[in-house]
Image (cartoon, rainbow over all chains, first blue to last red; front, side, top):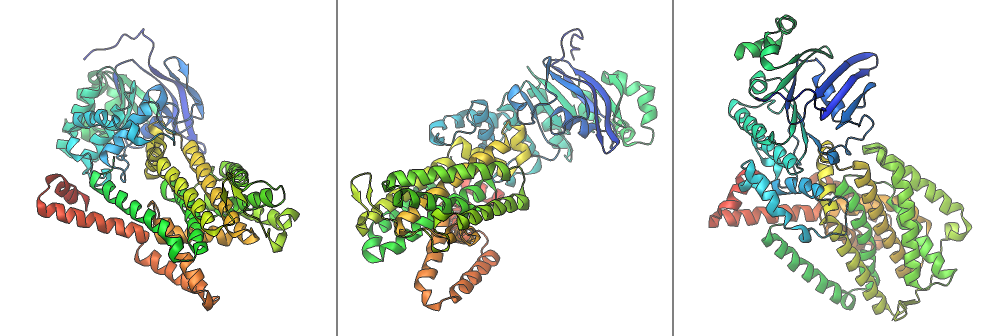
Length: 262
Length: 332
């Protein structure tokens, strides 16, 4: 596990980020710097504001105050569809594939985007059929090459997640934001997804919001613990898991159950 | 992208339909077949928006009717040739679609439908009050003239084949849109808007573009209508026309390719061949609509598609084709 140089400019950074819903602060004054090519986990009990924080980072929500920087550039006011083009790609908590498209089309719609084909209605798909070879390679990477012609909606849950990762890889993002990638998964599938993340982390930055400490322990360089919308502690896994504030904050909480399982 | 066997079957189907289209005017009344093309094209336009972008427009009659008036006016009053007249109508209809679309795509679902409906009502009102539309009397006696300087449209068969040709070109254009990077992105957005955003697609842009393209094809249908029938009237911009096109599309199959044309055939047939029943036609059409919505929701062509897939899978399973069998097991 390599701890990145703290003096280097963070790839993604938020400063004093807050989001309030009618006076209730779901996220309050959160400042996090994510080092380049690191895996940064955000954990916390239910209601800690992890998902809101995640949606702020991915621009699906607009912050009430504070700012977000990507490679030193202010992206606070960008639209959610413009940041994927800068190299930031998110995943969803509930597996998000296009169910009515085939598995291959799922990857293709993503890959064509990275090749600059998006809104052209006059270009024939047949001219772009060599995209299929590249897309098949991405599918092979996650073990889905035999399912290419199936409708994505018919895949079992674990395979949907694998497909989602394949479509994300097809965009070759610099930063991947994963929202509880192992939510609702059995033990076997968790192993598969962890492997995929290990594979994907080479040459890129990964931010993951997680509930499952097993996954975080093996993967993360740095962990931010959130509680009631604020940052409680930040540090390495060992530092965070032994921190008395964390232990105190989670006494009786579900995080302790997770720790107990480890 | 499509399974080769299926695309071959589709090719045979299109070839057969083309032959049918060539022979049709010698067997049935050409005006009847042209009416199928005009409303079929209109339904194809509507289907592009509803079936592929998931946007239910309740005001497509506005683009159809505006283009009909514009083309009719250009030919009758300005004395332009039908080709230029059609071009003018399509431009005006597309421009209107741009304005309506810019407002409508701000909202989704029922609100989208209501905005298109409201703006179409405005267009209807303007058409009623403007002197150059002829008000209640409509714009009549629009002479067809010479198309591209060579085709004399006053000859029924020439008119038929020009209409047939325009219809085919427009349909090919529709197929190109569907089988383009844009078409794939559009289907993806319809399937999961948030996911499409996360890949870097802008839903407002996809929707707006789909709206304009759909409005353009609807306008072409309207322009074609005034050339074929030699008149445009208030009913072309009326909400009934917008409702009619929804009916045709649902009947033929939303999200299919040729389905809406089939829907147009059924509705046109009922109107023309059962016209002796008078008002009862509306009731019969209504009943068919109800049966369609309850009984076979995918529409006629949608159901045929599903049936074809089942048959093919069944056959493949018997022959032991591993890939298709796998698809079947996972599929249903």
